[in-house]
Image (cartoon, rainbow, N blue to C red; front, side, top):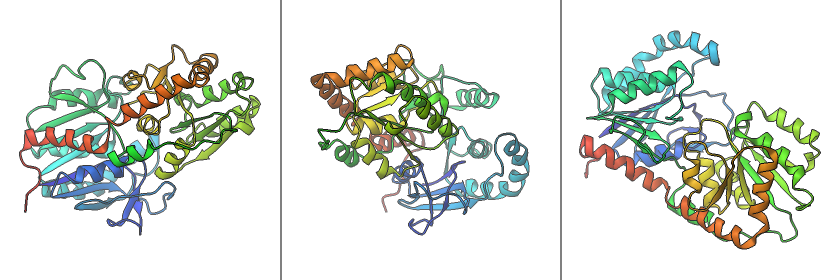
Length: 387
């Protein structure tokens, strides 16, 4: 079976990749896993030769072929205004690839993925939609429209999986089901969980890895540090990732008198992130942002880090096994108290660390692939020939 993936994920040329292209984040790992289910997989994605290569991950795997599209110019309103003209130039390419394929995968949200979704419906192709945002919370007209459409089209040969997971079903339509998100294989989870060697004289190291925006809670963690210095004189924080609020967080660290304790690591590749996590003691993620299934939390738990986080989306489910602490509020004082409780009781910390690894082990890429593969095969039949 030939699968085509139509996505807005920005990629770039790479000599390191068998396909000739690379990108960042969890997308290349998930496409590599998904491609194992099919005879061939074509990725129709925007490609920008001038894009930064920091954090580059080769976009390759079994039978993967990349069809490059020019990126939609601009951001926000400019992007919306440019989109109709971009579509006029590039729709023939997308249509040709969708026609050529046996089935279509459209990651949503995303404007380019939406075109793939609509074309699959129009051409009556078997369709797999993975909603990668927060399924339970809609704020924009586009988010309401995606939710409305997916609630109604799910069923038959149209497979809709919503990223997340709570105690209740994602939709009144029983054909919409939850799916988790991950970027770690079973082998990587085992490697991450290997015993860590820590400097006994070093103070505890906190870490947060995410896109650095206000709603992710990095500023709150920085503000909690002065409340912890007296008990943990060597305490430090790694801030990993770029984002619009990074300059604000740097200034905040100075004002709070903890600039020498906060290391801003910027964009780091996958292996570098894992190395930083293995050098830390606690993952602090007091987010108020609409989260789907944050892979960074799973990566931290795989490394044995207890998680201090909030009652957002799937996060309560991830720490329910004892691998973290849920905050009743996100004030710096509450965060500091949670950090204190995790770090002052060695026995409790070790129990939480083991629970975190146990939780992460249930969310491997192999299980993600097989869960999706089972849903697709039940609706579409055999996905891959045995020849």
